[in-house]
Amino acid sequence: MSHKKVIRNQKYEEYWKITLGTSDIFGNQFIRTLALIVDHIDKYDLANKTVDELKKGKTLNQEVTHSKDLEAKIKSIYENDDSTGASTRKQINQYIKLGFVKPYLQGYHSAAKEYIKPGQSEETLQRL
Image (cartoon, rainbow, N blue to C red; front, side, top):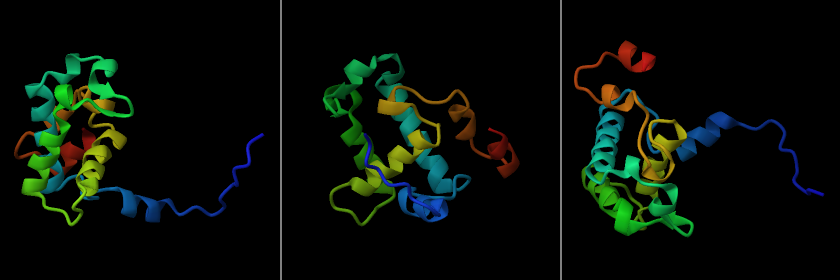
């Protein structure tokens, strides 16, 4: 028997403000960070790895994913205030939550490469 309580009147708008690294998904920072992630996945051919290869226990396998390198690259461009790197990990995780990137960095959505092309209109980005 579950003892979970039903939360009434949940405020998802407040939740999203807290969990997304950035809410402007049409902005330069979001697109540039997505480009870094896509380039990283391609560089290490992560789309052709199995989930078992990509993770080590409950965390990412650094020898395969090099995710700490990705975090450092993103943090060097978009500094955050969290010395543990949690904000940068949260920033990367938002791309997974939104469907741009597959879990464990095992590839990205087919439209991601189109999304990061320079000069896209907001209308095109919304369609993608």
